[in-house]
Length: 181
Image 1 (cartoon, rainbow, N blue to C red):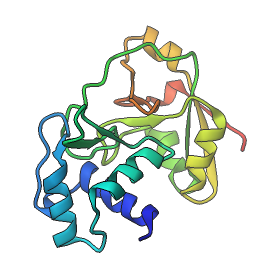
Image 2 (tube, rainbow, N blue to C red):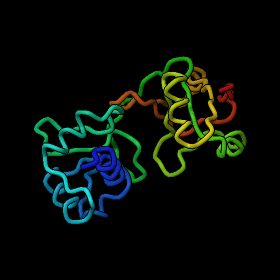
Image 3 (cartoon, rainbow, N blue to C red):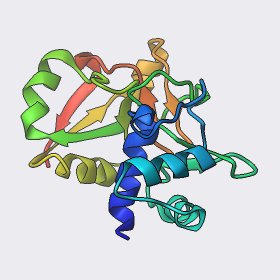
Image 4 (tube, rainbow, N blue to C red):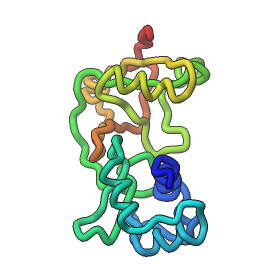
């Protein structure tokens, strides 16, 4: 089985479409593992067993998923388009964070800032290299330096997910500096 494709399918289910496999998430984004496995077997090309699911979670380089303490429930750590509360703690960001995207989004960002679009939060990276890699997934990359320290001092809230992605509701244009790639 192609674990990368299975992981993408899992991500789509846990972030955007649990109903596509006949499951629901609780208010904190948790799904019952047994129901998820049964749903994926019945409704996707990626029927997973528990060992394969454990391997996907353990080896995911971005730390997208988490199990509860007894591994009976699983959730995506962030990136949801459906309303869930993944219990993020507000925290102070570093002075600068980074956002990488594709050139095709540059004009919109320059006019409106960073908006979550179909997600609950704007995703930001701690370092320039990670942001560049994210941007490259969307074609020719464009890189923005986010004045996150100033945003926080101005009252905008930041959260850090379990897998170290920085999240905020919006980044107005006043806090963005385009960087050369």
